[in-house]
Length: 76
Image (cartoon, rainbow, N blue to C red; front, top):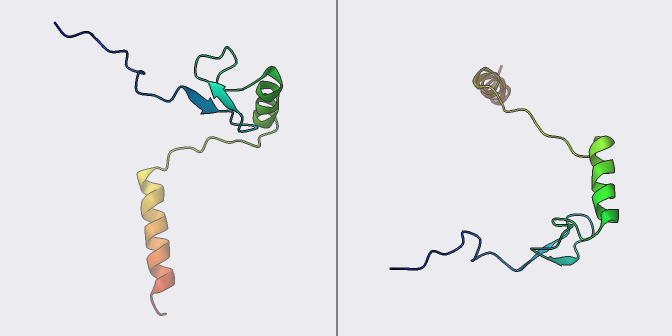
């Protein structure tokens, strides 16, 4: 019988902190950050709306954009 592999066994053993880019171990307790300081900086970025999550584009909005772009490209 073949031994089961952990689903993350092929992943890198380290990742980069999204704030300071320092290499950190994948199993670090602060992961994905390297420290509490970087965690707080990231939280501040969300609180000050430096980061945003866009809303999914709706089909009607996509059609309107396409029609608008076609009109701009065609001669009057």
